[in-house]
Length: 273
Image (cartoon, rainbow, N blue to C red; front, side):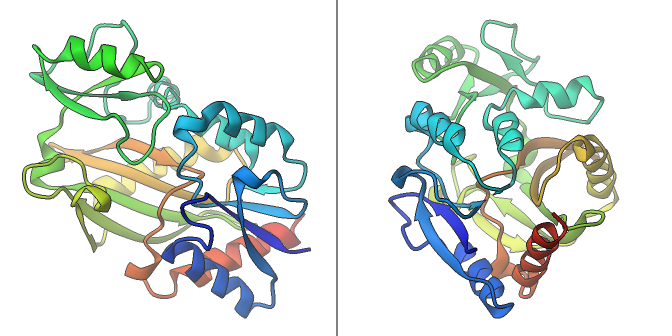
């Protein structure tokens, strides 16, 4: 049975990340193909990858999830939990250090500026940085696309950057792979490369390692293959910005060999079934 890398119509042959992972699997003798999720549920094993156009098509995407019959990585139950960013409230309730987040009409966290975004979003879609005057308008604009999330704007993202730590989990304990530091372009606050951000490989410090322990402990309730932990360090304390468990860019090109670690983890999952 082959492994279907789920993509979207904009990336029918996958991204650089996808192709590196696919080639690593092929080097282990596995059959891999790319499959746009909009073409319907494949019959073989499914690896969620660059399904990046799901946000404006969320109802269709949820139907797609309902139709999946074979094994999926990460599993559908993990994706359902991770799809809506209100999972951040679950982390807060569990005591995981997390960027303060309010939902809908709740009072926003104390700040002089805020970031407002939809609960279901990707790649900084409809993500606004606003002051007190602009906050009501941003909330109403986001509400057109769903439930708004409101967080304090953290200057540390602009001044220091946002971290991404990558983990893979096969049949044993999660293994740390690599970390990158992402910084926004001049005059922006968004760290994504498509918005002018830059990326460099870095080694995480003790604060980030402590946060990872807390996050990995929480995620023991799920059976997951890959995780990207996005974090911001504020006053020496690392906070979860997001957990990416189904469509993250994994920055393989910044850490040669990391794609093979990911491939081996997937094969362990498959063979351990």
